[in-house]
Length: 143
Image 1 (cartoon, rainbow, N blue to C red):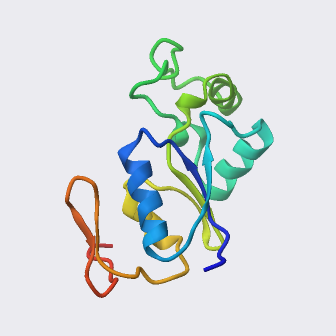
Image 2 (image 1 turned 60 degrees about the vertical axis):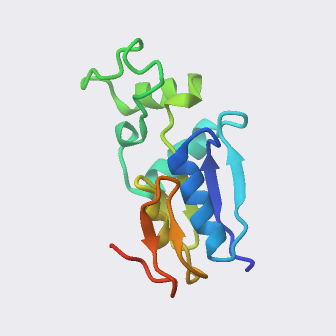
């Protein structure tokens, strides 16, 4: 299928791998951007945040990042400061972010991507941990 889907992906992340696998399970090969190797520009990051309808703080990743060391838990920090931190340390950008003709979403949990895929799943899908997400007929098991 020639649907334009972009996934901002970290291959070290199970949630990101599951999300990518569900896109492919629909017969779509997305554009994969390993954002730690190729971080988005500030303008693109701001656009993705806006299109996802979230605040910059909602895109911040805490686990395995310099979040605490940088004092990013301080609620008085404004959006510009948070975006600046993500630009300086792309590991702070939570993943996976998916862009499709149906919208932009931070896909946590990974099955959130099913709302963005304009094609039916081609068969059953289970996450890496064994949790069944899609049945044999390609239907989502939980919304």
